[in-house]
Image (tube, rainbow, N blue to C red; front, side, top):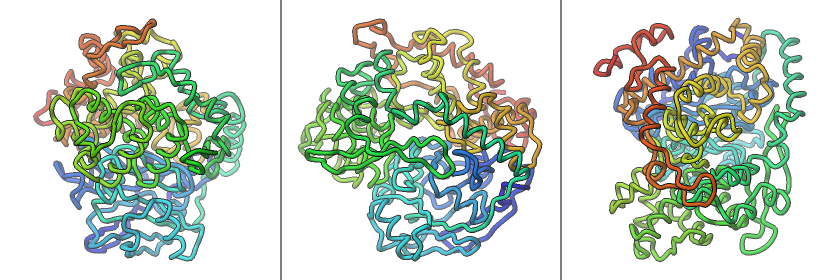
Amino acid sequence: MFAYAGKILRVDLTSGKISTETLSEDMAKNYIGGIGLGIKLLMDNSKPGTDPFDPDNPIIFATGPLSGTMGPTAGNGYAVVSKSPATGGVGEAKAHGFFGPDLKRAGYDAVIITGKAEKLSYLWIDDDKIEIRNAENLKNATVFDTDTRIRDELGDYYVRVSAIGESGEKLCRFAAIINDEFRAIGRTGMGAVMGSKNLKAVAVRGTQDVNVADLDGFTEFVKLIHERMKGPATKKYKTLGTPQNVLVLNSLSALATRNWTNATFEGAEKVSGEYLNEHYVKKIVGCATCGMRCDHIAVVPEGPYKGSTSRLEFECLWSMGPLCGVDRLDAIIEAMRIVNEYGMDGISIGVVVAFAMDCYENGVITKEQTDGIDLTFGNAEALIAIIHKIGKREGWLGNALAEGVAKAAEIIGNGAEKYACHIKGLELPGYDLRTLKTAALGFSVSFRGACHLRNGAYSPDVKGKVNRFKIEKGRGKMIVPDGNLYNIIDSLIVCKFSRGTYYDGMADLSKYYTLATGLQVTPEELDTSGERIENIARLFNYREGKGTREYDNLPWKIMNTPVPDDGPAKGIVVTNEEFQLGLDDYYSARGWTSDGLPTSEKLNELNLSQYSDILKGGKD
């Protein structure tokens, strides 16, 4: 096989045993790489019911077939997959930058890490030389300091490091893994799984070539994608970046505000992408092999947070801004900076704080329980203070909130569950699902929990292709094709910001794959691989007790708190009747049972019959 390294590395942190095995052509073609390969390896290398923090729970670093090539965006990615401490089901996230290419160039399509080191350690991968090294001196170090100090210790500035911060060491259930200072394996708590293994970081230096099957054809295709990247398909990302969404969603009454109390934010102009770029953005940078440059690096020019620097995307700006009622960009930039230092998911942290603020304002928690922090919506200083407590698991409330909103609500009690906005245990991203009802359906069926990146179901709502104020028959069927497509994008590890440059969808991606690997794959076969990945993820969740209709749900506020803002969305909620209709439609389109389970026939069709025993006890 071309493009693939053809090798999987296994590391047992308990015994220190290190081994390699061959990646078969069948597995490569059926699961592609990235999250597809990672979920397959998770299923085959874990036992049912294993706790996410058990040493036997594997954490898998996976590259894609295009990682390490000159392919735009796809050449620079990697994925991490494990059982999520947030959801108890499939945990996965992707990141771009420079770590992924070096992992592939070191000679590995995936690294399966099990066990628990006796003391804090880091894994050093130097081509075929593998070491588990002492990291006790890095205890509670920030991600950036960890990166710097490991490279200094190894004597090579170009070593690439993927690391956790203090929150990962302390098992915050939404802890992230960060590479290249700002790039995060953000969602589903993968950083906490690393922390549970006493694994502070993975450092890698790769010096081997990654060869493609048809160099001339691949080069021409890369040139084509680069040209498309210069056009309108990526304009948003090159100019204002994703913070452009602030005013767009606000105009649609879809900007979740004050923990899904309001759907519009009166301070939206002050935290808009336009205002951010005019007053705070100092430079725009890009990843290896990328033709876009989308990283908007913001610096606070004056005031109490002068000099604070961070990359700021819409989701994180929104979560620590409008969702918390905060309209100060200087404070949001500072909050994002410290979130990166602790190594936390920039989406979940804001939702957790907004949840706490909602509980505080409704008398569910008291000022005594906050250690004197005035957790009222809009209090920027309180936002920053409570983030420090969560990152350190400091105090009763900081410790509870580090569990994520679902578990924190159980700890707090007193009706707190009504303010906990999550799906399957994963905090919602930045869309008001009351006024974007296709998105509500799409988020609910995501196998990793609340997620806008598993099927892009918000798109038809935002673009006005459907009546976004209702769910009707056909809406479930509408989101299936993009679900398959997104699985392939995340298995090739193509950046979703570039998805608009693949004008012919699966046809372009299958050509990309074939030119690189030499494995002939049709668009239809690639679509089947995307469907296969969706189904094996569903099976994993079901095996772990999380994969039925019961878990495809929506937060209490989305279904019970009508939008109070004046305008066309006033009074809107997602009703149970329309939501259940949408689930029926989605399951039917997927060929699943009414309880949301793949049938034996579907498993046979997708060459997944080896997992049919998992369905025993389910409806068939």
